[in-house]
Image (cartoon, rainbow, N blue to C red; front, side, top):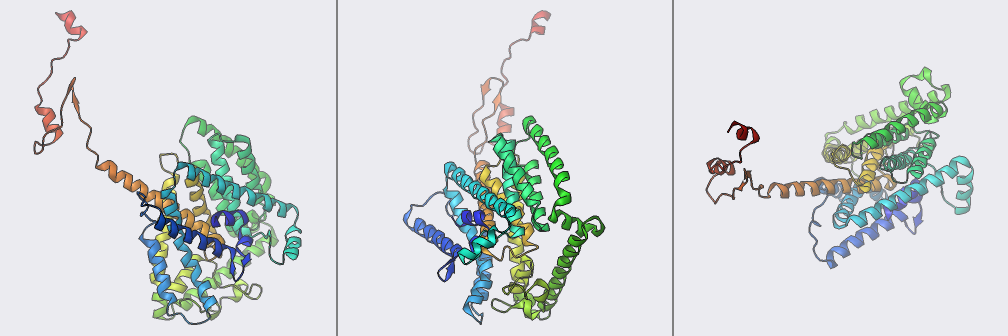
Length: 459
C-alpha cells in the first residue's frame, strides 16, 4: 500500500504527517506487522524463505552498527539512517512476490498502473493550472499536489513505458497509446534533465524489450518509433528539460537563459561533490567507516551553500546516493551498497532482454529500478521515502524472480534424462553401474529395417 500511495502522489504525499511521524512510516510499519503476523500464523509455504539476497541484510547490518555509537539528536540520527534502512523493503516485496499467485500479481500490476494514471491526472492539472498547487496548499496548511520535477518526470516515463508495452501486446490499444503520448508530452514540460533522461530510458526499454520478437510486435514498434520521432521534433524546441539537456552538451545550441541555469546547477553539484569527497578522504577513519549518522557532513565540508542550504533548510545530501553512502558509511558501506545496486540493475537488464516474455508486474519493476536509479545519481531520491520505497520494492521483486529462476534451473538440472530411442525399439535405462546411456545404445542389437522403395526395385 505504501508503494501505491507514493507512486500515485509522489513527493508531497510522503510529507503528509500522521501525528509525530509521516504517513509513509505508518504504512511501512503496517506492512512489517502484516509480514510478521502472517509468518507466525500462516503455515510454512514452499519458497517463502527465499529472500532478496545477503547484500540487503549486510546493508541493514552496517547501518545498525553505525547507528549504535552515534551521538546527537535522535530525530536527526533516525533521519540520516532511514535511507539505508529502507533497503529492508526488499525483504517484504520479495517474500510477498514468492507467496503470491498469478492472480495476485496481476492485481498488483493493475493497482500500480492505476496509481501511475492518478499521478498523470494530477500532474496534468497542475501543469494546465499553475496556481492550483499553491491554492490547495494554503487551504490544506501543507504542500499538496506539489510537483517535484525529477521524480514526477520519471514516474511519467514509467507510465509511458508500461503503456507502450500494452500497446505492443494489443492490450487497450487506443487507451495505451493515449496514455503514452500524454505522459511523454507532460514529461517534456518539466525542467529536470535527469527526469527527462529517465523518461527516455523507459520509452526505449519499452520499445526494445518486454515482449516476444514477432512480426506483429515489430510493425507496432516501427509505428511507435515514427510517432515518437514526430512528437520529439514537435515538442523538443519548447521543452525546458530538453533545452537544459542540450545545453549540457552544447551551450550555443540551447536557449541562453536555460543554458545559464543548467550550467549553474552542474557547476554547483560538481563543487559540492568535490568538497564532500575531499572532506571524507581527510581522515582514515572517515574513509573506512564514514562519519556515521547525526553529523551534517555537507556543512562540515562547506558544500551545503552550493546546494541551496540558504533556501532549503533541510539539505543533508550531496545529490548523489553513492556519495551519500560513502560519506555516511565509508568505503566498507559503499562497497556493499554499490554491489546491491549493481545486482538489482543486472537483474533488471536480464529481465528486459530475456527470451521469455515478462509479466506486466515484472516489467513495471524493471522501469521503476532503471528510472529511479538515474535520478538518484543526480538528486536526493533514494535518501527519501518517495524514491527509496518504490525502488527497493521493485528491486526485491526482481531479486526474488532471480532466485526463483535459479531454483527452477537447479530442479531441471536434476531431472533424469529422457530415455533414448533406437530405431523402433525402446532402450531401457541402464542398471546401476552399467555405464552411460550412450554405451548401452551402442551395444544394443540392430533392428531389422523395412526395405526402401529403391531396394524393392533393385530386387
